Image 1: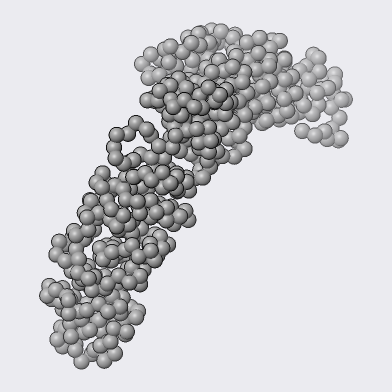
Image 2: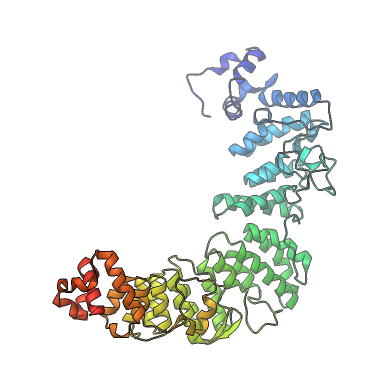
Length: 553
């Protein structure tokens, strides 16, 4: 708060403390801190000090709370001013002044302990770390804050683990007050753990994330151990190291990860077991990647020797690769990055479990899949040729209405007559136009049951009116009442003479319902132009009417 020259606080230096206290009682915590900082000669003078008054209030409140088994619930308005100062991000010199006053009145206040009763307040160090205040964390450590103190959520009923080594500390959440409550191990943690869990919860990488990582680095370099709460079980050859790097990777703290691993590189870089541990870490990095293509941890682990494929598999194909993990998160740039490396290694992959979400990054990923599938692979655990895999890829793009990928794949001449049928079934006229435009026959008779890859593909891509009898695309379009598609097929040379009798019979019945007149009585209404396929270059009301006469004669 800047000084206002119109306010003459110096004239009130002899004002009784009760008057100043009355003035302060109308201010919130932030205003008290700002006023004290702007006018220290009034509010921080000997005999009347805002911080001394605050410390006296905290000690007095604790002394009135005599039941040491029930925690003192501290509301925001009752908290020491230090907590608000940390939240407001005030200068460290102000925080240091507060702490010196607090510790003079109560030495344990540096850890948020003002008396014998348990309290719902977290230690200041945990509060500063969870807020991402690295300079405040350094100051608190310098002034003697206990970095090993544990605390959980501000609700004493979420009991701490029974084996919590700090169960005797007076923070309520660190005491198993309610034995019937299930312990929350991942929530009862140190200041370092608080920075980790806040970092894991963030969905983006920005200044807040960088500040939290700076807090974690300060605490780690001060000798605080990496907490094991929340670390995933691991089958790696070095479980201790794996658990040590697991949470920093999940939080996305690359600089902290380097601080942990760099001392181990001279002896571990060439050891296979060390590289396997790095692979497990790489899998965690992919699964917890905050944004697509944010590969700082991924690139670092690969640069120091991490494997990029598991070495323990006995299967002839790879199903759960890093590319699979990334695609399931819709991180297609990262998936593409790994897929291109697998192409160079010539790996046989299982392609039935890739996720193809629609985004601006789908086409490059589909292009890489096309290249990888050209080497053959597996589809739903069965060996599949490049032709079957490409057919599957076209069908996936058709189902997802991925127009750019469909058009590119059609240009590669990898579509089949089955893909034409599938485009009609999925009512995707853009895919149909791309495939017929690429030269696929318009009168080829086939059945969706005849495609080896799609037999399995159809198990989880249901479609209507499944037929086992071979039919032409026009027969299928009319049977499913896809009239715009039928018009398009006629324009490109589909022959009505190949239609089944049932479809023709259904058309006559449909004409009666649609136009409220028998087909036989309406022939004079047909136009001569509809006798030519070129007439059906678009679909409108006239052509919809005339199409019946072109087909049925």
